[in-house]
Length: 481
Image (cartoon, rainbow, N blue to C red; front, top):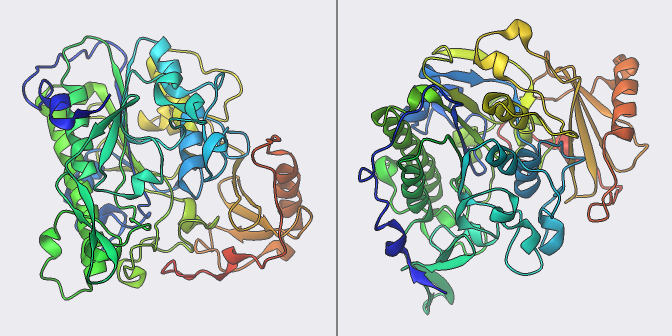
């Protein structure tokens, strides 16, 4: 059954339903995730050209993590790591694919299901990418613990910011956008009326305004600033945004204006959400985390050298260097997190599972690669446990592996299971320009042993090594290949 979008929001408009603060119980948990936002695309992480005043304020009021990593260097596996609390070599979905291989399955232990068992209401707004109608139905959000889902199921569908429909649970909701042919150049254009991320912001606000004494978990999975790299047919040659905002009169190419406008629009959405939490008296009992699913992209035709989206790090999305996997992470919890603080703890998406379980008062399920960072949030760094290793792999350019050892030593292997490991000292070479494997054979040996044993076998994700030269070694600080 298909119904019009306005019916969904008729009874859930912001400001209509009062909310009840429940400061004595477990905290509300909110995970807000941008799509393809680079480490340095926020002012509080060094961005000079794009304005992000609300996220900068969030950092001033909370804690900014400087060595936080996505679950993967591309979309689907990063989300799988987040949902399962298992690292990239053990989680269900390990790459971008189609159908069954890119879907969670019955029996997978997920964060929303675990929180639901602890009495949480669970909401997913935005991009899912881990299940779809059809052969991938085992991965549908409500089969893995979400009470409500509104957004995109298929990540290819999510490339369009002005879609003709979205999903409400398993029901299509038609939008007023229409793709029409453009005869003068043989392409397509959008009659753009409803911007998906505007609708997601509205739904995110609706979820926190429900009158209910139970705590909630909101996973707000944005699609900005991801490009529409299927139909580059709107503003900015792939950067889809309703208007160029404050960048309209900049002496920049349209692609640069549109990309910056997407980031600033996303920033304003987060600002509106945090303000609403304050207005409802929920801020002191809500942990909000803002981050990105992987490193920055170059798919909108915008100038990476202008924005320097990876900052001092090398690589972009699809690289196992830090530019592809190190992401901004801001934790905000007024009254608990000391304002204006920074943490240099090496942590990653999988750690959110243990963190949420500790705060919810529920045991961490077995088989998770997850360490709670609650001590860090509470300012008790001396009690914080740390990983010896963090792990990533990549399947799209011939199999590659990477591990971070003791928060300092990055080892990357490509081309074959016995090929030499490149070693980078991130303390002294954060841009990973100089291979120091020859100077530290003992470190290489430890990383080699770990890489040989870190992953579990998966019939869907069998390593396919290639002798193609290691692309991770050829990226400069602008992120360009």
